[in-house]
Figure 1: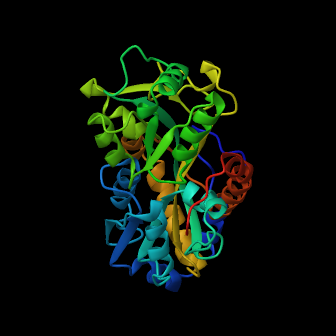
Figure 2 (figure 1 turned 90 degrees about the horizontal axis):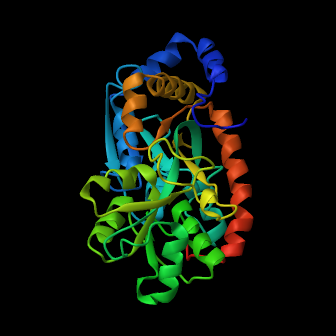
Length: 330
């Protein structure tokens, strides 16, 4: 399956499965009083916003009410571990960036979860690019990524950047930028992009690598400048900002997905029910527009398509992680 932006994936497999479900199974799925969507990142960020947009759409088809719970820490691992241990009755839903499932296995000797065993894929929610931004600590004369890297090389005290988590895709984007330029960029991992942005605005760090929607909301302050974006093409959310490729930085086209999961051993009926609810929600204009304000392109998938995407991205990141040489203690 070729996953591309502005391409709403068809979920015919889920629809066919739903058609075969009996009334008793539907009653079981409909009996959920409260569903909790768990995210591993702080309130106010794109992950949290995605959860809250979709939580509003779970009623009445999936659950009578839905709430969002932020279980931050360990770069998103705490949220995955928590959902792993919850009953597979459909009341607990995980929303996570896919990098926590596809990159972390390469950097941690031991994870508290097995991405392919301990959770059940339901659907992709959206795709997004990353931005590389600088703040007040960097001179206004620095207008491009190469210029920032050159500045950082001659100003080692300012050669640093923050990301939503150690081992996340934006962490590796910053590391790869430094490697290509021969600059030792010091990394600081946060519990989400928004805490990193606060340190950027306070001149505690020089740059932030993070989801573009987490950065664009700070542009009106006039203190933040996006120097480059990670997509293969310019982002429609920052059309005046050139891609890394346009700035002569090779092999740096990286995007990511937010996706939804249930605990392992969730019944096919519950998975299909939630998948169909998510698919319908992600096709609604208010959800598309709402996610768009955060730099996110709404899309959905079948559980099988999400499973294949995870396998593909896990294989993609293996050589990249090896080249960067980053490891973490699990």
